[in-house]
Image 1 (cartoon, rainbow, N blue to C red):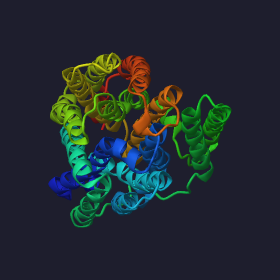
Image 2: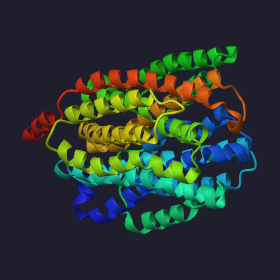
Image 3: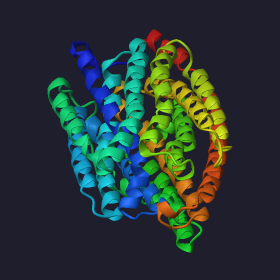
Image 4: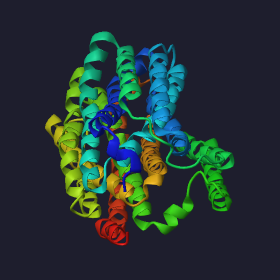
Length: 470
């Protein structure tokens, strides 16, 4: 179902701006991954601390996605998106000016808050503009823009890092952010709030933040005693959160939506498991190629391009197919390919040929590209247009939490094998051991995700039934 006002909207302009928004953030993340070893040397950071450069962004955005989705539905999605672009740009400046690891991690958290505003609105704006028969194609183009950012990021990040230093990776995002800000101001139409303004669930938000932060921080601190305490606090807060949300008149997380909407619930679970499985791959392989294989940042960036290039090509095709073929079939095939790629990565060692790395990355890109757009289409097709904001934010949150968990597991294995030594002094064989263990566990998570993907039920049949009852 489309937004009633969508017929008078310049759809091409909306698609252009949302695609630009989809491009910026993955460009940032993928370019930073290539720069991590140089950042570690420049700021004397350990591999564990470098993981927090990525995790702080993901954790902050994961905490704030659903709240901003609520705000966007009740106050206006364009307003939240524009604010998010501004905050993200400020965070990029702060990151470039960082004097130590702590300041950089904090700046990345600022970027993450801006990213939450963007991720909770861009897909919702797109879904409200394009109808069921064309939404898959639009989402596919949007996903292609996202993967183009992922594709260009490693190459540009490697060139910038090697030629101008790692700070240039953050500075290049400033003009990109300003250009996106102007485009959003003048090209996006003013949209009426999709739902009435209502009281904010502060208790639910605080409990959710404690649960997620406690769990992720504890995971990265294991096997220290305070790591177990932090994880226990996170689990306890999650149990309290479920109780609060069930009793709330205006819950932050609509647990009823998960209980009553099987396609929505299973699609989100599939996204969580898929991103938990594959997200740490780029982070780990960036360190692997520079620490174990001895590649330069520029060469590393070129190798890492092989994954998102495939994703950029495949995503629009998968999006169009998902308008005709059940998303659960396409997404499950994608997850099976992803599991195969992750298992291949678990076999890499210090003498593996570079061609094997590229082949595994290409297979991973194919799997994720086939999974992503059909899964997003399934989520957005399973809810009413008034719920697009919260549905988009919930899906983004499950993906982000999956990413955080993926990074947390990688950090756990790195800490247990290497410890808190400077990244430049890390023994290559110990890092490879940590990487292999991470990928084995990720393969298992991906295989479990296939079951969730297959069990979501049919989307197109229910959509047809809804249209016939009108």
